[in-house]
Every structure is written in C-alpha cells, then in structure tokens.
Image (tube, rainbow over all chains, first blue to last red):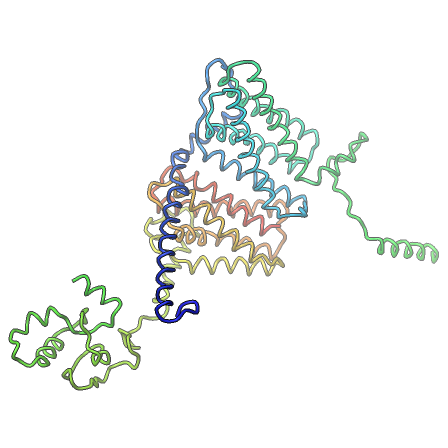
Length: 264
Length: 257
C-alpha cells in the first residue's frame, strides 16, 4: 500500500517516487559539487606566518612611488582573520560597556557589521574601480581593504579599554590616516586620470575613516557619558553614566530623610 | 565469489558452502544428506552460502544431524538471525566505541601543550570526551549562575564548521568533521578550569583578564599542536593557533561576562 493506493497502483506509485528521489538527489549532488566547491579558494590561503606578519606591518606604511602599479598580495587568510579579530574586539567592547542591542543579538550585530563592511565596501569599490578603469581584481580589493582593517583593530582595541576622548581622535587621525593613505596610494598607482583617481580615493578614504568613527561611537555606550562632562578644567578622565533610581525608592528615601531630620 | 560475500552480510550465516559441495561430492548416487553433513562438520567458521535451507536457520554454530530432521543443537539461541550467542556479544563500551584508556591519553596530551604530540592519536574520531567536556563547561557555568547551554552548543557547532572549512583550505590532505570536532572538544578542558574559577571569584578585573588570556593561550596552543601534528603542517602552527584563539576567546567571553 502506498499513500492510500493498494495493490499494483501502490507498488507503481512507490517505484515512481523512488526513481524521482534518485534523480533529484543525483542532480542536487552534481550542482552542489560544482558550485559549493571551496577548493577554488585554496590558493588564496597558502601563506606562511612570516608573510602575514610582513603584510600586516606593510599595511600601515604608505608607499611613495605612485607612478608604477604597486603589487597587491591576493591573499584571503590575513583579511579574514582581521575581520574576525574586529568582531571579537567589538564583542568585547559591547560586553564591557553593557551595550544592549534591542533587535537582534550581540554576536549577530558584530558579525553583520564587520563582514558587511568588508564584503559590501569591497564590492562597491570594485564597481567604482571598474567604472574608473582601475587595474584591480576583486580578490585584490578584498585583500587591500581587509588589511586596512588592521589600523581599525589597533585603534579600537586601545580606545575601548582606555577611555580618553582625545586619545581616540589622535588614534583616528594617525593610525586610521596611515592605513587609509596606504590604500589610497596603491589605488592611485593603479588608476589613470585625475578625475578617476579623485573619485576612487575620495570614496575609499571617506568610507574607511567614517567606519572607524561609527564603530567607536555606536558600540561603546560609555563614551556618551564622557561627552556630557567635557566642560570644566578639572573633569575626571573617565565617568560612567549614572543609573536611574526608580521613583518609588526615591520617594521612600525622601520621606525617610525628612523623618530623620524631624526627629533630630 | 563476491556475491556470496554480499549474501554473507544480508543473509543469515550458515555453514553451508556451494564450493565445498562441488569439490567433495563426486558421486551423484551417494546420499546427498551425508555429503552435506560431512562438509559442515569439518568446517570451523561459517561461510556465506547461496542456498540456505529453512531448517538450518535454527542452528548457527554447529550442525550435528542430517537435513531432514529438525535441528536440536544445545547451544542454539532463541532469536533468529543473530550470529553470536548472548555470551559472545562484545562488551557494551566496546560496541559503543568508548575506550577510557584513549580518552585519558588524549586528555593528558591536551593538559600538557609543551609535550610533542603523536600524529596518530587523532586517527579515530571520539566524541565522548568532547561531549563530557561541553557538559562540564555548561555545568560549571550553571554553578556560577549562568544558564548558557545553548550558547555553548551553538558556538561549538559553528566553530567546528568554520575550522573544518579553514583546515580543508590550508592543508594538503583534507580533514573530516569528526576529527575537527574531536580535537576542538578535547582542547576545551582548560576552559572548564576557567569557568570553575569563575564560580569562586569574579573574573571581571585585571587578574581575571590575565587568567582568561592565559587559558585562551593554553587551549589554542594545544589545539594547534594536535592539528599540525595530525595534518603535517609544520611551520603553520601560529596560523592555526590564531583562529583557535579567536574561538576559545568567544568561550572565555561567555565565561567572564
């Protein structure tokens, strides 16, 4: 019996269903092995620790020679690890400042922000580079932007733990500026024409610096307390926002104080 | 010959073999029953047969009588279709694949990250130890007042998938999901020590941060040591240790906060 059909019809029905399942499974496995083959990414993960360290340090040093196209390492291990590090730093910052995310989870927000920036801005810059006739491939763009996040990681790691407001601005300008200059110089060396260079590099510089600003102010609530107390010469270096005392206990406190004052 | 082995798996094993029948039985005039019974008694192990008379289903190990009489051998089990008797079944732990000696050896390897690891210890996928350590982590977190079992399981699952993808991309020989899950689970043991420390004193402070960093380093060093020795990736231990450190850092965040 098969789905209510007895005898020969049931048997036939079962055989037809089996055959359709086999054919469907074969087609699905063929499509999966064709498109979900991660082996095509294998050459981009073939690195040595020395190479990764060298590239990390190089990402903070702007190149001087912009008349000759600069070499970009098409490697994805370093950028991927830097994005994950940024996620971890964001999570740590959110946890230490007791940030509450109302719609969603902390982990989801951090991963979405960092991966969204890396993949989204890379794709947008690749599209602009295609419009401006720059010689850069998608993997190179991903790699360049990923290594540019190294400056972000350092800045956020320091300023999420040491809450000097002016310190953040110094780090933003110096470290953020250095990594932006490096990316801009590499792009300029690969683009011809003044207008195209201006469009590409202006967009990249604006997005990169604004992202660091956004990360600092959106994910570490404690900073808002500092902004309120910026007046006065003798302000303490760090202050937390005061917690609201509920109205009931406030009233109780007031009546208790009045009662004690009356009895004294 | 191979089809007989196929029947061997699906069919009930009997002592009856077609080849012995063809070899030994020369005369067609002789009693067929005598021929079969002589062959069967001489055989030690049961072999696959294409033809199984229904009477033979009742006597698995030895065949004492002729085919026409109902078999009444003393050692026959009551259930049809089982190869071994109740006394010859393997012990339960062996059937489940739990080997306490191996589990202890792997635990000692994790606890001492400076000792060079043997590459063959991860040949068998053993998920009992990791399961116990995950439960222990959840239990110690529970003792500190945090009910985070779901987070522990979710983060281990996603972490295993991510590490599996990364290791497959970075190593010459591939690695299976079970091996990655096994290694990552075993190296979770120092995190259990951190969460039991969290029961005694709060980790949100400088000594807590230092202890958490030390434990993260310990976990990731052990995991990367086992991975590099099992996958023959010398020189890339730091490259493997960093993603492991990020994963165990997430567990530490769960424990500390």
